[in-house]
Picture (cartoon, rainbow, N blue to C red):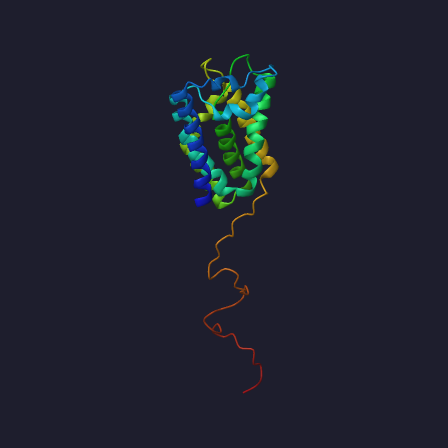
Length: 213
């Protein structure tokens, strides 16, 4: 849990540092956003999730990044090492290939990927920890699922949809990569008892001696 917390908080601090530096020094980092079909826009596959259109955009993404990132890394540490790069690069490439001709940026594609991975893998694994994490993220951020549909033209639903798709794909591919947590056993489990055991001695009239008196 501590490693998950430190890793996710470190990433959030990086996003805020980039946004503050861009604002203070007037850096035109939006040039590194993802632009579909353009060879220079292809660099956005790497850099777009690190950039945001403003502080309001970054604030909206910070909480999901923290909660979903911790849930992913804590619950599935081995899978997270593959899921995060796969969602990051896969969703970016999908947007570059199929999205509208506009600048696409922000970490929301990553957050949708983490949300759909944690929720889907909980259904597939069905152990206690997986179910708890799945229900937790759904209760907190289940409303995000509507973001995969087009609504506001200023919002890249394509990034949301592609992130969600790669999150679900990752859940099917890597659902068993992390070992299941040990099931708690109780003192009475595992005791071998015969079906005909009677704990209070012989029943009345139940005597095996057939000899004469």
